[in-house]
Length: 156
Picture 1 (cartoon, helix red, strand yellow):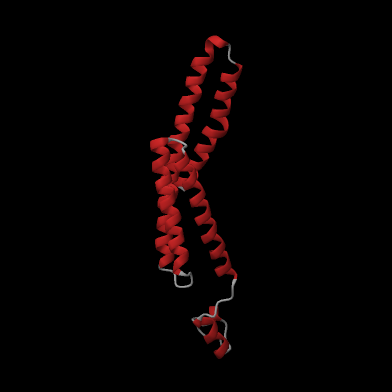
Picture 2 (cartoon, helix red, strand yellow):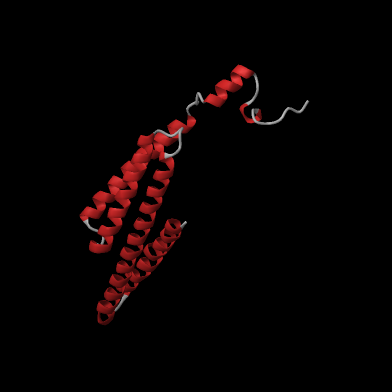
């Protein structure tokens, strides 16, 4: 939830405040251009800070989800490891953006996080959609009862 809230605030800064500051700078008379540019630059720095905090929050959330997925029996562990790598990429990206702003290193980390994220998401969808040969299903098929009714008392 924190990452989502920070992303919403980031979009407000990026999509609204930056646009307004840039438009004010472009249309300002020459005497005001320096002040308008400084204002636009300050808003850009706020955007860097918001992006850094968002990346930290998202990276931490992904690491926590990866730790939970490792304990899930039906999800292959490599998916959790890819989630964890994605989380680490976001954590490093947050540090880079906070230290350097939007740099070439940050751009590489953005692409890396997207590729890793896309890989584990697609893999997870494939695993979720394929039929599972679970012990409950086998027992249900052998006993002729439904898996969800196996622990229910008889209604005779």
